[in-house]
Amino acid sequence: MIPSTKDILARLVAEPTVSRSSNLALLDYAESLLGPAGARVERFAHPDGSRANLWATIGPDGPGGVVLSGHTDVVPVEGQAWSSDPYVLTERDGRLYGRGTADMKGFVAAALRAALLAAGRNLQRPLHLALSYDEEIGCLGVRGMIDALAVRPDRPALCIVGEPTGMRIATGHKGKVALRACCHGQEGHSALAPNALNALHLGAAFIAALQKRQEALCDHGARDPDYDIPYSTIHAGMMRGGTALNIVPNLCEIDFEIRNIAEDDADDILAGIEADAETIARPYRNRFPMACIEISRVSGYPGLATDPHAPAVVLLRRILGGDPSTLKVAFGTEGGLFDRDLGISTAICGPGFMDQGHKPDEFVSLDQLDRCDAMLERLLAELASAN
Ligand SMILES: [Zn+2]
Image (cartoon, rainbow, N blue to C red; front, side, top):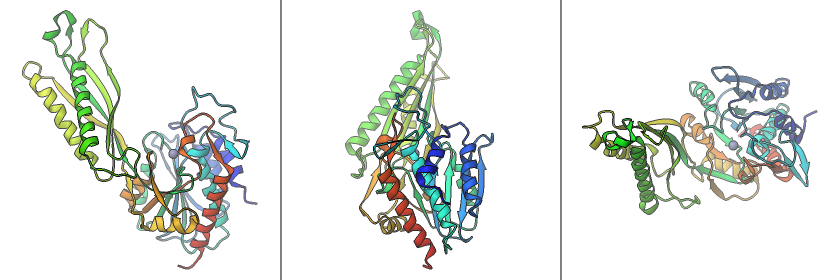
């Protein structure tokens, strides 16, 4: 007897798989379903063994077929006022509440159910499940699985990333690079401040330069009208420096990010920022040889810009049976990695809405889950047909 998507979702929600914590119990549960159904299951673990990706294949070996991609980690619930236990799936008024229901265990549950159904369908092309960890902290976990798949001779043809789009087809999102700037000055007594080099002052000049670059992108940068913010953005999110008012600080750290549309190359934007950093620090270097602003990359993921006529979109239009229009989403996904690093035609479509993600009383509606189940049923029919 194949469990319902709702029953599977209840088990997934019960595992508090916050990023960086173990998801192994969740994967054990997934394997307890997939193994007896005849799926070939592999894990690609984090180096410390505490969490892992799961890759499962149903149907024939070989190239082609479709990947259903989802992350198993969720964001924390601390400090959020929930009406019910976030780790107990709770049904109220046609909605299923719980952490991760929308983002994105609802899709993972539907994908697991589809895999169980696929076992009885004599698939002509394979169905793959790609369940990752640590997506919410910069698409970090999935890379181990992508690297392993990249060296295999056979590639899947298409990938559906089930992040919540309200079951509409999303073809793109911006890329993101998270960066840190370390501004190095020289410490001194504040009474003799001009004899030292204030790292916070370097940092302030650097942030002003970031702001100027942002204004230039806004005023005459490339445009993609499909986004709410139709241009690439630069943003400083954290600034740290100083130990006491009477000490001229020697270090200031700034965490900032670039989110680029497909028309802009994040590395080009970064090259401009690096030139600004050098322009700011260079005049001080005669008196203060240590003066510099070092920029390092913390994390990032590529954007996704799938053509509206690409195979993944064509497939989704066929199996969705509803609104054929496409949209782009404001949040990032693992889709850019499947597309860029594996060359797999990729689009995003999943149940629920990101408006509910990351918030207290996150939910997915039963209607959205039903629509996802119906889409995956039609996908199985496609994979079972000869062409
Ligand atoms: Zn997500």
